[in-house]
Each structure stands twice: as structure tokens, then as C-alpha cells.
Length: 369
Image 1: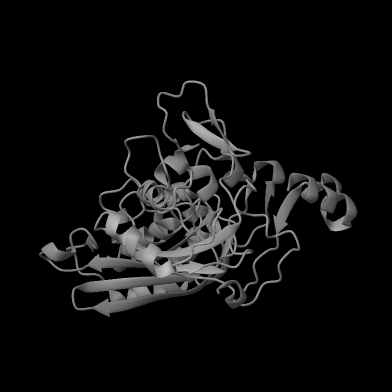
Image 2 (image 1 turned 45 degrees about the vertical axis):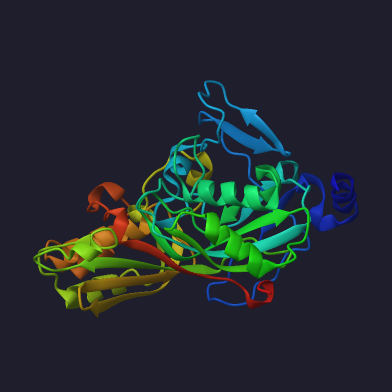
């Protein structure tokens, strides 16, 4: 396979030279069909991580240990990986940016692509991202079950998700994909087997064979997040793990006015937490928010934000600022001022993770079988 890819690069001008890196086209500003690069099929696999972490990483289907690694399990490559990208807000998000990946870092030892839709309560987990041995993560639980049922190794499976949610963050419709050497003959049976072995707070809602060009992260056109606020004097005990309790009454109209200041294409540098991931620092901070709605519910308030991509902790930082607006400590005009200032140190702290849900991920229809 490597020989065929190199031959293709030599014979195709668009893939030549400096060319042994694939580049995903920028996403369109509105949700819709995206044209795919001829080589976009080669985007699966576990990317080789930075060398700053202690632990292991994959490259060309091999496992490498960093100096100082204290365990034999997988470890995240950076602080952002160890945290998973909170809120599903990817520290290496490429939604409106150009991304690239070296062909020498991609495994070609599996033939079939498969898509999962997963729902989970993230309270008991240290985020989505696989970490060192002994640390509970959503990816770790899912991979362990897939390896047991399918008899495939972790490198072959190359499980990846649309959003690497942080510790305590939940998902209603997380999307992941994995690779297999053999075609999955009975998708419904595999889904039932996975749900029979997974912990009760993780469920596979859908299992489908995927288009060979589909990648849960890089094919995404946009995401929707919900943030739940239990705005009552006395906290509802049934919401304690799934909603932020705010005992002070919030001004709903001020929340609505403040939320609208985020809508549109802006530089969200003021609402991004810095990471130790050098690659994420090189990417821009301009994102497009399509809508930011404030919905009143019987137990409080639900914030719904939809955009083409989100920076590291961007959703929680926006919510934290809106909470100050709702309490009268800031005005909606202050939201605009903070956006234009691009200074994270001038913004209120971010909201806690347990009220956040990854609600939905958008993909081009032609990639969904």
C-alpha cells in the first residue's frame, strides 16, 4: 500500500513533492456538501502525538515509549490530550482551518471503516481520550470491548471521535469511527454485543458501515453543544450530575442579548484556554457560531450553541461569561468588548464541565451510508 501511495504521489501533481502530506480543504461557512480531495481516503488512524508526554504513541502501526514513561498503557501526548479536549472543544480542532498529516503516520493495515453513534454520562470518566493504564476514559472502555469482540488490536481499530470531551462532560450523540480487517457481517449483533459489555453509563446508539472517506473528526462540518443550568434556590438532586446549579436568579433577556454577541465569525482568542500542544497554538482562533440560543426549561435554563468548530474550552468559557451577564456583573456590550480584546485574562472563569453535553455532530450527507 505504501508503494502505491508513493507511486500516486509521483504521478499526480497535486500530491507531489512536499506532497507526502494530505491537506483537508477548509470547511464551508454554511453547513453543506464539501468537495473531497482525491487522497482524502487516507485520513484514518491514530496520529502520532507530540513528544512532551510520558507514555506511548503510535507510528506506522508500532508502539513507541517516551523517555520517562512509567507504565505500559497508552498515555496522552500533552496536557490537552490528558484532559481530552474539554467540552468536546478540540485543542487540535480543524473545523475552519487547514489540517495536514504525514502519510508515514497512517496505518494501512485495515480495510473496512465503521461508524458509531455513542451516548454517555461522563461523570465517572477522565474524558474521552485514552490515557495511561488505570485511568477510566470513554475511549478506553470502548476500545477494550471492541478488541474483545472483534479480536482486533488497538492499532488496527484506530478509534477516533468527533470531539474529545473533557472529564465530566457528557455526550448525547458522540460520533466515532474504527477500522477492521474483516467486514462486520451483522451490525445489529455487534451493537448488541458492545452494549452488553460496556458500562451502563455508555451506550452505542447506532452502528453502521461507513463510507471509506468518512472520518469522525475531520469530516465534521459542525457541532452543537448544550449547557444545562439548574437555576433554582434549592438544587434539584436529580440534576446534580447533569446541570450546573446557580442559586441566584439569572436575567434571561440579558443572557439572550449576550449570547447573540457570539453569533457570527469572530476571533475567539479571548475564550480559548491555552494548551501545551504546540500544534494547536499554530492554528487560528477564528470560528463561526451559527446560533446561540437561550431556552427556558422547568428546572432552569438550557444554552444551545452551534458552530463550525470550537477552541479548547471555548464553550465553557463563553458560558462562564454569560453567567456573569445574567447576574448583572457584565453587560451584553462587555461580551463584544471581550471578543475584540482577545485577552483571556480579562474574561470571567469558565463554567464547570458537568452541565455540558455534546449534542450533535454534522456531516456531509454523501459520507453517511
